[in-house]
Image (cartoon, rainbow over all chains, first blue to last red; front, top):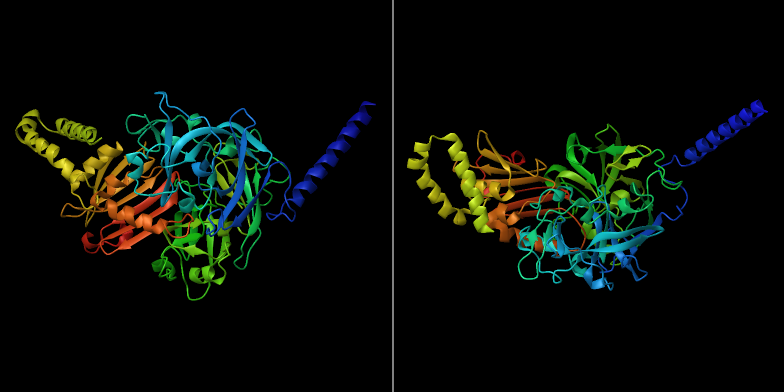
Length: 399
Length: 177
């Protein structure tokens, strides 16, 4: 009887290993053949966005609720951004009245977050967040408004453009799902980042230290499940399109639809970046970012590709350039990437309704910023710092 | 804010002086100089295009440690702050003028402080670029007297600004890092 029991167990184990093997083999391609489904899957779309003029912006919707209540609002047109962390919503689209975070002084807390050309400013409030079947409670978010609390002078001292309006942001908000759990780790010990402020009603806002748990949080890292990172899936494109549908899948290796398969893992160097090698040179401050709307790399001097005369932040070669670069992770993973640079003026002039441009590129002296076109035709994983995945602890990119 | 900045700068200069000079020298020669810096600093608040006093003002503003390196054609004043997570470098010509600044790390520095009298020119050019098609992209400003490159992303910023007309002869743009 005992021998029979052992034999049954052995057969069962053998079968289960067989199942595991075949199942992982079926997912071993980095481009799954089927549509991902499940409570961790959110549809995302590249289109013109709510302002009607965005190029290469991927948008989705989120549902916010007053914490602990069923008073909720679904908001669409939110930019999916792996290059930042935290949920930020334009106050002009928010109809909910959310609780304001206060500093130990009792004053309201506001944030100034510099992006590259723009900053977001506004109060830190808390909301319950629902995306697909995932949810998180009482999450600090930023509500974007230049008027709810006057912009701090240390914020305007960055010299950037406010992104607090639909016209400037081109989106109703930003879903920052990058590789860190909070948006300013150093702010937990120093006020000199000029990012978090307490804002008394009677005097000007002053920079403050903001504990990690009070900071605007990466919504993914505070989900109950599937909280170690994200996977973004888009089909390839060959020509400009008006729309492109893809998927934002929460978790890495937590469900059958988000396993890493054969994707290569690229860990970060001391610049929190990867190295991109191009034409014999290495650029060690390169990164992958769904929130950048082109492939931004080097400059006209080093590439020989002219900038557009009317918009010098895009390239305008006389004919489409087919190029190759190699990404190199700190862990030694490397693979070649083929990409193309088309004339941006031509891309934009073909059909005003187009919003998907796989060959849109521009200068970024000294490094590669692999923006949204890099995601077309790839499955790109972003693992959050200090979170475990089946292939090691984040942060890393994989594709 | 300016008064606290001056106080911090003043203390910094005093502490550096006191620790490195005999007291008599301090009283006789340095003290009058300190009064001078105290009054002159509000007018030399700028960094880019400013003199080396403005580097000290920047060090105080960023609450950082300052290290100077002498190169063949210029001096580099490197300010490390946020426990070394952010670095600002200021390039000073033999004439004593800051002809370039660079930044890298987990914070964007106070550009008003760093760019001094070029700040408004910078802010205007950034706003003009940001007014184009929405979409996040790096910023490159090329004007005859003022060049800026801003790259990176949130929590990992980098960039440089320089004044082409006062970059010392023979110093290539790539030397500014």
